Image (cartoon, chains in turn red, purple):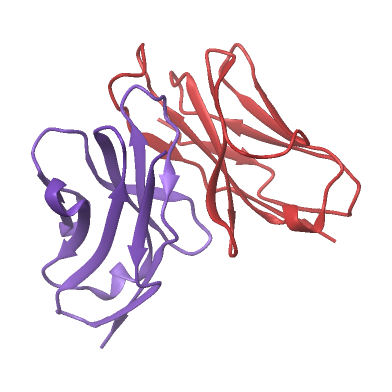
Length: 117
Length: 114
């Protein structure tokens, strides 16, 4: 099975622009989570989608949004980019069967490195 | 709220020596605990997980961790370090029934010297 893929791998934007990042989960996985990784703040949870519904949300401003499609692919969008949004954005997928009461391993993609100038 | 604290942002060991990376957790409910490894320019790979079964958990690449409720710890160990173990290691916690939200520690960079 192919792993989690993220596109693009690298991205350079300027302040004020918006950006969309894409994540394709492992085939059959219905849960997709997004994380931001920076040297200063470390790894922080952004949001999780399960069957096209946002199930969990981290403490990020409304400029950060996401969605999930019926094929489980997910996108996250950051509007009005700031310098502090420069980070590695990681996506993870999980083969969760139902209910969320049993932990299912999350598989991480290689990330998209966003640089905001 | 749940959190994990990793003691030591950088750890250096000699090849063949014991690896010990420390993680303490804080959780109001029984937690799920994890150790992930990240190599440069890559995503995270799960080393092992504790989900309320056996307290001594064995993972990949010879790593293991012991869940100690009395000490609120979940330290990662490996008897003999190898050069290929050099990477950044993250401890993480999630809540049973709370979906897949992971709360990560700040990471420990492991250096393995000859």
